[in-house]
Length: 503
Image (cartoon, rainbow, N blue to C red; front, side):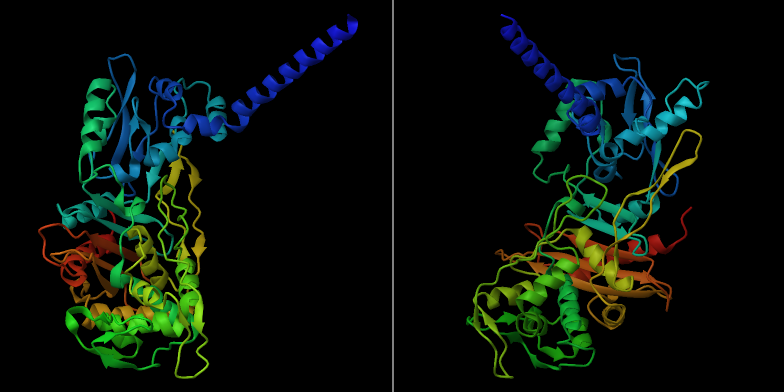
């Protein structure tokens, strides 16, 4: 009998220990993750009955705050700028949880970090919780220019400070108004959310960093970098033949230049007119699969960028091009792979290549920043209720895809594109602007294409202060559009706004 009691006692003790361990795991290890879960109704309901910190733009405009209500819950979140920052800031909803900055910095906005709790404990005379204010890197003035310049054309605009990685503007059209989805009135909030969900143009989708598109000829900057970094290409060699197309090995389908034009020459010549034939040959024959894959990944392709927002999409460059069929032992012959034709298409940003506007802005930023990509971020600093900075952002390098010397070559090449090439429409008097246009053909009938441009700008002879990517999506009923005509003027307006002093 005593033996059975001992066994029962041991079993009960084991159950108690298991429950104790699980409880501590939930309270300590998983607590932060559970609190930040957007569907955690208990956490949301708790937080809607107490103050929550503000979110403001880099130029001091109020973007999100909590207001008192007469309803069941004491507070409701409001967004004074309506749709302007919706895809970045997100919303904080009683019914749908949180997204964007509201989710990423929920603990700071709620005052739930150890630092904020300690500050509140040391200031016992103040009854309200010591919640945090998040200051963004995004400027409201630049964001408004991006919205106005893109207008009602579906697409996206991203502007970065290449020196720090701070996002200056990140706009996608269509957008949505988070004031509607954050209503405490569940019936109204659900009605608006369902309408947004059903909309064919996906207004809830943050295209700037959650959707991928063919980058078209803007990707030629990556191919040029691969040529330079591999040593196969220099500023003056080789001199590509002047042709109207390039026929890759193993196929009888040539890659034609835009509008059937004839082009060739040095790297700068190819960049200036965006020569398909030259860049297709460069990637397929001079650089090859390993070099192209490696260079794309040095820029951040096939990896999620560490942007401090959720749901960031990884841009894609294919990693398989089949078996090597010939070694290229003859000096006049390049190695041939089973999918060399696909590699040629990938080298000009078509085929299986896809990129977010954020990724292509970072490609431009690398060239403008001496070869380094800084970690992209939207949070500048977090302050307590007294205005004291609790957590300033510390810039760091994410990728270094280019040597400083090769970055300088590409920088000068892109300046020529904006001075006398396809990106002339983004030129600004008295400012050093570099650019690369892209026209990503969608293979539709009638023809449609995405219009792209990427670039950078700054004072002459100095480090670039702004990098930009503009995408205008190809739409049914619209004629084939080019990056130089459609996207470059948008980029010019955004660059001008970003270079102007912030108020």
